[in-house]
Image (cartoon, rainbow, N blue to C red; front, side, top):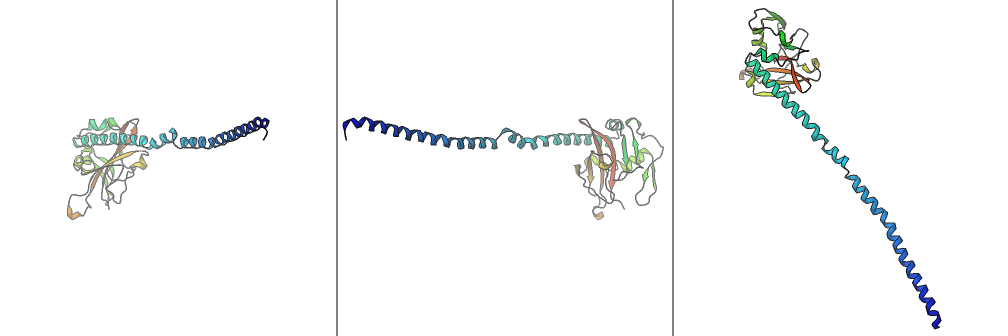
Length: 231
């Protein structure tokens, strides 16, 4: 090879090497976009909105817990007022618009007596009131307020009942509690005795059901229901 050809060969070799290096860079740059897409996809799978939605149920479930506590506290105070025959304390819980219904059996009827907070009868009154009809006989229930209270409201020490449940009935018979039909959106607390005489095989159970409606953050009493086994 002639000496003067060497510079030309060297130049050609350099161009070839540069072209090879440039091709390698293009290959690497072409591989970059998939890596970027993968990163974006991974970030999308763990975005904050999905994390927020995952915690939403626990946030929502906290409110009913507070509401249930308030309901239980209201029921406890009402049953203690009934125990103490404290009508002033009882009237403070009565819904001022709907009044307080007295139902001698689980199923509320149009025959039930309803009183506004300032119109509750007195225990001293001897006036007889018609409260409905007696189960089985169909005879009218005509009693003074005290006699009705002693027979169809607080005939047992319900404040010491072994079973206290909210919005879930324990005592159930032929007559079905319909408080939530009469008062849509209402809640209730049942004070239940499963029975008193073993020989009765549970047929002598009794319950006092307190029905409440919500007034803002407060609970208001709308019904006192006496429940028991009926014919």
